[in-house]
Image 1 (cartoon, helix red, strand yellow):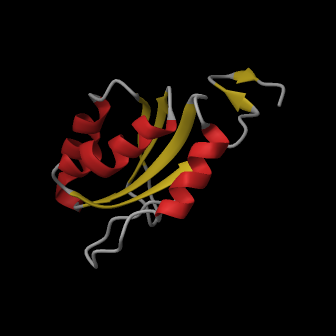
Image 2 (cartoon, rainbow, N blue to C red; image 1 turned 60 degrees about the vertical axis):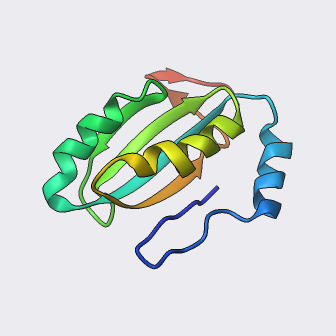
Length: 115
């Protein structure tokens, strides 16, 4: 899923795409990486605030065209959707988000997985 919010008012994911993701993930847990572009002066405050969400497992301040990466885990896709569309935008200083759904984890938490 790539849900973006930008100053240009780009619309969120279409209903067709949302329906497809719901069919694929259904009731399985969902892991996603969320890239945040933030106001430079707000980077530390944003990182600290998003760290407080229980579903956020990791928070990284990074270099490049993204400022902060989050790793999140939810029991269901609908909860991820609510987080991205309603809870995350309430954090002051976030200019844009891009959500990437994890399809397969080959190694996580230092442990190799068998796909």
